[in-house]
Amino acid sequence: MIQLENYYWYGLAACAYLVTCWVFVAVRWFHTCQAPKECHSYIWPDRKMMVCFYMCGTVLLPYVLNPTSEAAWLLEKSYFPCTYYYYCGALLFCFFGSVKQRSRWKTANLVATIVTLLAMMPLIVHAWLPDELLPEHCVRSWQPVIIIVSIAMMGYTAVAMCQVWRWMKEARDENYSNPDDFPTEYASRVWLAPVMLTPMLWPAYLFDSPVVMMVMNVLLAVSNIVLLLTVLPVWRRLALFPEPIDATHEVVVYDELAEEPYVELAEERTNRIAAEIEHYVKTKQGFLDAHLKLEHVVEHCSYSRSYVSKVFKDRFGGFSDYVNGLRLEYYKQYMQQHPNATMEAGAQASGFTTYRAYHRAKSRWKRRK
Image (cartoon, rainbow, N blue to C red; front, side, top):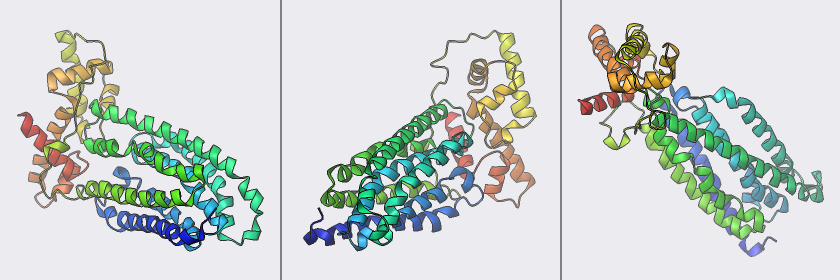
């Protein structure tokens, strides 16, 4: 039951949540989308989707304006468990899937979108249009559907989290020549977000309590600000490199053969593999592919990934070090031949995604020397 003496605080807490959503939208859209201009759709593909999701919270306005309305309350308490897991799963698949296998999950994302929309639509219509449009008992009987869809979206998000964890492991295994191809640092901060949000999404629904919802709205408003502060520095660091990156931002690299059988290579075989690697990566300038991965080199060699990876480590000092070493040399030549070119253009022409990636590779190369 809605207690009339508390309705003011219920609406105010809901309003605080919506305001932080709108602030998040404004910052992501008008500030962060400027850098880097030429490749933000590849590196940060979730921007438009996140803006859309945060704007969807606007449907909760009926509860802000009239917390005593039963229709608005049904919409408010059902919105979070039903939609937030879908939002998290879709963003994880979109942000990291664009870099990895976004097309593979396109159908699953579309199905999740349709299911969530169909589940929420009767409640939205009931809250925004005259109460008599939909019978109250029909809307109340819709609650089992909300629970089923919410649980299904939890499963959908769990799959997304597992997939991102696998991609993070691949990144740690030095599968990428450019660290920006998979933002491991960012992924490590956000992939567990659905788990951390769970305690804030279900209590109001399970207890049917506006008081609990009031607390939830305040906590979710704070989480919006925290997420914004978490994301914003990442965007700023993508601008043309203003200052040296601290060593703490270096991507941690692990031995990718640690879990594989030890491979003992004869000298002759090592030389053949090394020659194939040099032919593709250096002679044919495969290193100019900004998104070159170890598996791409393996496809052009006559040996398995374990052999190629071991030769990279023993003969060339590692996949990413070898490739980025060639890129650094190419960058010097390019800037000498094109004195009017910007540093960003030179970095991208040399196989780096951004000048920031060039600077990181150069700093790491100096430390290795």
